[in-house]
Image (cartoon, rainbow, N blue to C red; front, side):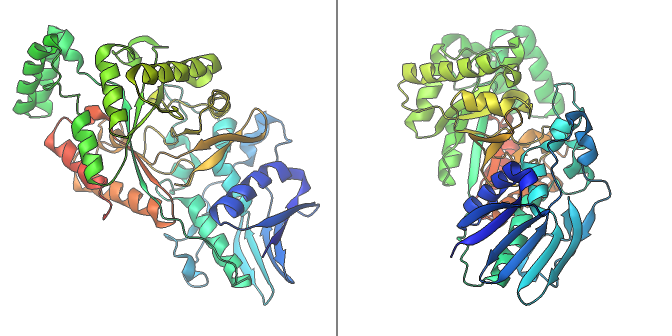
Length: 461
């Protein structure tokens, strides 16, 4: 049975984007759309109505004033544990727009939460357009985000909004079926350094050996690195500590996963883009090995591509050419930006124009969690055109370094680190989202690294 959806005419374009995602894709509900003058989103059928408050966004306002539309802290919360227990949320729901109340009568439910506006806020990354905060790599940091400041970065709050919306719809229309989607674990590897640089320099070898012995306390790794220094000159990669790809694919296949490997096709910023060339024989051999085992080959857009439409298109073509030269018949449809550099104003448009099907950059570098508030895939928003794009976002939920590395959370190989990783995984999968994991080949140097990786990709945990 088709629902009638009425959207405020003053903000129909952004809210229709949300309706198509939430009602059409995620809840699988057919609906007819009309526009109205009322500041409300209304669903109705058969004399029953669901009325949602609507006050955000006001895209007609001058952009320099958009920060005034951001939610004020502390956020109000709605406790759903009694009245809406079937939603099974993680706790009181942060209210990003509107008021924390739901009023129910026989034929109507009035929700004070501006659900569509709040979801637009998160999926469009409105705050990244409205606020100037950037780190040393010109990235919007987690610590500047509403999710971090409001204490919900580790919760898929958009997915929880959708679950609550679905519960309200079922109360009014019990015959409406919502198809249950099973989430999946998506394992991916950014190929920053496929080969250990110390194989080329005695000085680099000495520095790495000091790190192996003093910081990592792993003499076996130090010995392996020395052996690699010798064998590397003969083209033998068996002792290269960074060349973990065979083990990586073995581990993924044993756990029932097909992984994605994102290669840097060019050096738009020099050495920060890695020390390998896409067309050198050993790299082509690696691409061939990945393709032969039916894992995905994608692009890790180099450091300066995030604001360069021409370079983005150039690098996708280089990756396609390398695949052809390696005999890998893949379309090269996926991307993740190097250093997770991202400009919400530009990057999605340039990736869309280059023909990518999806991007999976969507996580903060300094913290893991739900940057977009969801673990589900969705078509992205263009801030240049103020309309949806064809390009889809597959939000990245966890990069290993964000939890383990001293530069970020610095939890190391501790029980606290594993508990946080498992919590993010569980919450991503709970409502049908995907747990998208980034684990670098160069972060598998020690037994502890490998044990953590194998544990987090297990399907039964």
